[in-house]
View 1: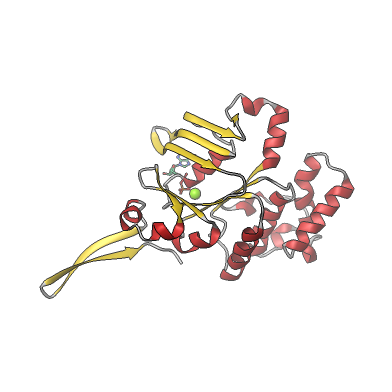
View 2: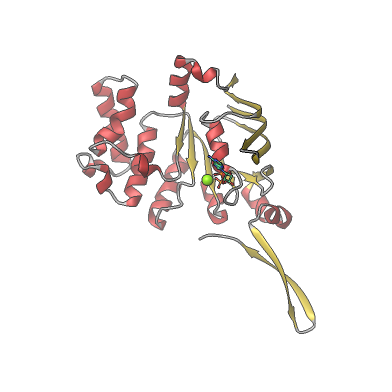
Length: 259
Ligand SMILES: Nc1ncnc2c1ncn2[C@@H]1O[C@H](COP(=O)(O)OP(=O)(O)O)[C@@H](O)[C@H]1O
Ligand SMILES: [Mg+2]
């Protein structure tokens, strides 16, 4: 469904994605792990066609995604409905007068009928426990509720591919648990970024790791990655240091984890 071949991307000469080749099948749940600055957000932007590979190729369902393809209005309309991205701090994007209008916004843009819009809005508001707030302005919601609203605004589109950029970074443990459960049941193909190793196993089955060298240094099961100290060091997720107990020197590994 999503196929990247030798994708490279740099900002003003600074390489942030280096020869990225990945293949994600329909229905897969992928976790993209890497330390800050490794290129996770940039990779999601490529997959969301907000930016384009400077070298290499991106195919979505076999269609090559490049600047000229994204000028084809009919294609763009279906692509934007299919592939959606939840930004890292999405609540800055909330701008409608009420929660209802926020949820209805993109459906109105698509030209759906009012009856269909209302059905979808009420369905997702209920599923995300936002029904009591439909008439309230979004800025009056709590942080966790805003995050839920942002996600619901994407899901009303019934996307095929859901890209989430560090969705748990600003959530309390209860809302994080809710999100983990919700994503577990969701049928869409998902790619979720995180720098939190301990959450990786809960968010998906397949782990992709971006190393400090901006290449994919691991593609496999989460459990196997946790056994691979060398790869964890390469990802910058482990910190190795030596210290002495009397005459004996020990090597210790510290997990750089953000709980
Ligand atoms: N718009 C931009 N212009 C210049 N440099 C950028 C831009 N966006 C990101 N970068 C740089 O690219 C690198 C990778 O960024 P990013 O993809 O956001 O990584 P991550 O999401 O893994 O933290 C960082 O060093 C960042 O400073
Ligand atoms: Mg990021």
